[in-house]
Image 1 (cartoon, rainbow, N blue to C red):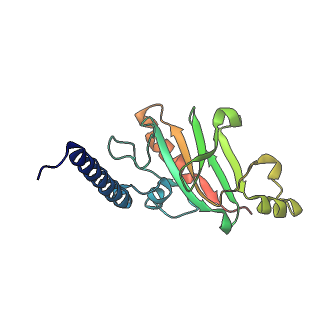
Image 2 (cartoon, rainbow, N blue to C red):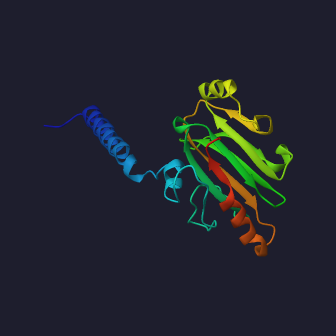
Image 3 (cartoon, one colour):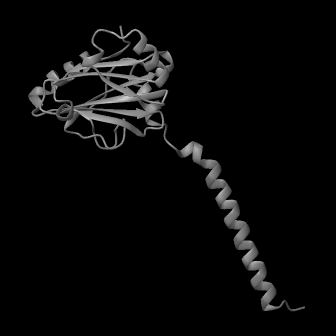
Length: 186
């Protein structure tokens, strides 16, 4: 008995579709094992929450977070706004520093640098809409001096970056980043 060419083609196409479906399912099921942890999780490995933790110097293949600048020193602070507002205070004695706020998915929510802030020091309060309403009822004395950031993101992290103009200044920058505060108001 001879099979028709049409039958052979149909069987071949069906076999190819089945093989493609099996490969697709295996790839989808293997994703959780092959995906790296989120930036929010990676930062947790470098110290406690609600505290700026100095990140290791950027070396190719050993970055804590993607796209970090090797000419900068970095410190990160994880926070949960469910635990209350977060007050960021820092004094960084270099020509350029910046702070970025990221949600728990690692997406940028807010960014600021010393040039846009117009100061060598940083005083920034991050809170939810509800927390801001409560704060307005009994504001702290220095509220006018703070940069106030209102967000709907409950979990997140701040990344404080400071330019190192010369290797001899690296220790000074490290000390300034470690002295930065990521705590509560009051």
